[in-house]
Image (tube, rainbow, N blue to C red; front, top):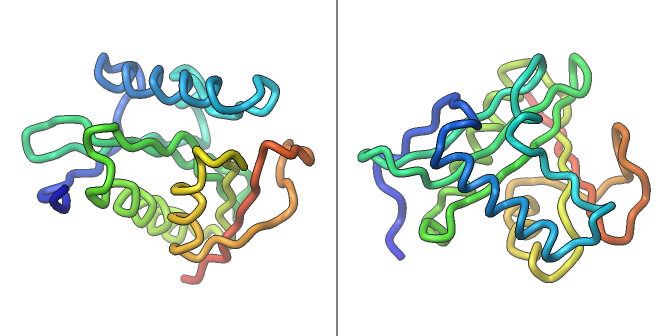
Length: 160
């Protein structure tokens, strides 16, 4: 597929119809590939509130291509949440663009680290490769997470 052109990433509302559909697909895939107790994806209501920013990536015509969120864990630490690329937009650089956007925002906020949790199943291998290409390294569980054979934990040290 061709690279994404005119990608627009902006804060958005997770309760918009097209975003709801993408998040429902995301949650369905998480429950289809991971044990229920290992699914840490947020539903739309969990993507609003203090300390959380939600963005969507859209093409120039407004079509939804993906989403991501940044959750503050501490004044100097954040967590990447609910990153998802629409099926039709995969392979076009949307995930990399969203990740770069969240990394820039986390750095601008003065975070020293950015964490994330993803699955260990083969389904999540492309996501793990993406995070590793962007400088994330495996780490121990963070925040409220606990050791879980179905979860992989990553962190990246940020520089100003």
